[in-house]
Image (cartoon, rainbow, N blue to C red; front, side, top):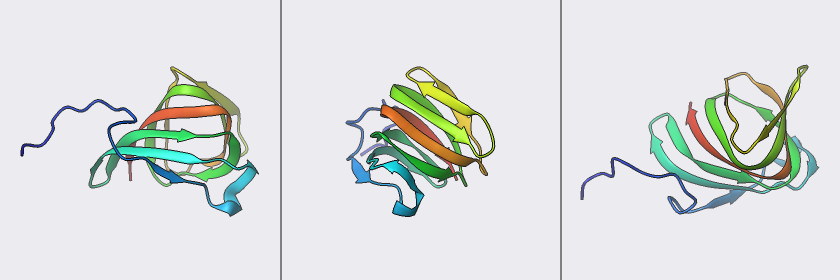
Length: 115
């Protein structure tokens, strides 16, 4: 069977994996993550990720491109500004970013991660 060379990202592209942030990182609420990892190639990953309302501490050791598909979140860099992200916003988070991610409305994003 030949490898699929073109793939749409959707919640049907892969089996969902449900998880939560580590308890010691949760600041508020009980956020639940659902990830559809559509592609994995060595140190490159892409797919879709959804989080329900809550707030947790983040520390990025990887590079990530995100596009918000649905919802509303606030990403705050430690010692820096809070950034509101909503449907249609695209951004990059680089290794070393520390802060918090707060989901105000269930948020769905497309992502590409390089570790």
